[in-house]
Image (cartoon, rainbow, N blue to C red; front, side):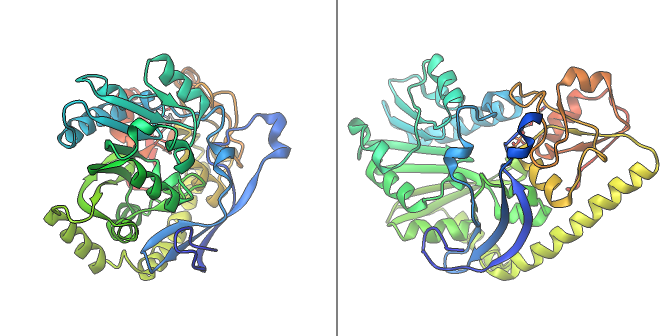
Length: 394
Ligand code: TYD
């Protein structure tokens, strides 16, 4: 496999086997046409970057019907409100603000005041249309050099570019950073947050790895990559979202740097997050995790317990296909997303049901696939008296 930023060949250190598109919820009549790829991961030690090999083209994923609306989770809405409060310090009066992957406009909506000029880039038509309907200026396209050049009023004048759980989806990081370079003012700030490699390793949350997540970043990788383009990592802020994320704050060179950057880089170096050693350990941990979850499910099934899955997350596709868990183990997966209900899970073809069905057909046990939303979910499903479990500790 080739590193997408240094062009260097890297040997994968692990394969998760045949994998479908994580968000490819499928109708029965399309089972025979389902797309699969071999999901392998590698680590580029030059820039400490954990990356996926052989990913399908993004056009296949962020298509007409990307089944994810930021506004669908109360927790995420709350998170974005707090994110907005944090980010305000990087604004002046009447700022120009761009969001990469603006989804349904939940986050950008906060800035629609104080004379700010906002612009979202969102390649998925259904969510972009939703944002436009809510009067959020949205470009229904990918964020890249050729698309940003059309917005002359933002070139070299943008005060803030932000992105959440998006940069890890962008195959061409070089073009992305060069686009940011075209847009940012001299004191402009780029803020982005992504699932954090350290948290993924610690929790053995290998379900963070799927076709949309081409990279899992760390402070070491972010710092090294942006340095190549004369940008610097000036601050970091750990987040609890997505089971452990990191917010990275980037500015052009020679700006003050928070001492937190040095602290996290030392932490990562001590824990070998900047080297292949930690990946080898992670591989072993994934294999152990697979064995444990299969043992758990076999144990429950032998005891005559019924199991359903809670939340048909993208992440669950990795778990189900890597561990080969199908509907002989899990009766159905319940979810709130209209686009997923009535379809089947990618690869393993477990039926996706709505919440009404779930409440009328409660199983003995529930595999919580949205373990990252545990508090919100357990709180609203208090009437369930059986056992919740997951591959990460709950
Ligand atoms: P998330 O962890 O954000 O998923 P992903 O792995 O896809 O990034 O969870 C989003 C999915 O979980 C989405 O399909 C909706 C579903 N969900 C529920 O069904 N109920 C809930 O209470 C929550 C929080 C999510």
